[in-house]
Image (cartoon, rainbow, N blue to C red; front, side, top):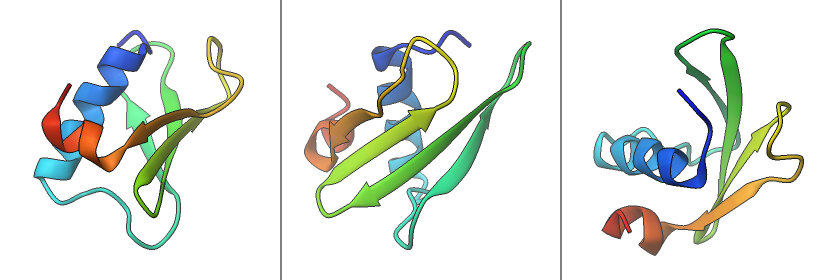
Length: 72
């Protein structure tokens, strides 16, 4: 899976619908494929930050919970 903002939004939308967004601190998510990619997802207030040690994101990609819930 290529890491793009759109793909991350889709992933987070699915996690929200399944009730899997972390409420108690960061959690690790592993994306399938080669190489295996590990993401850290952290929910704070109404914001969701996604961290990765791989490029293209050197800073966290941030979303709002409203954005995730609407799937925009």
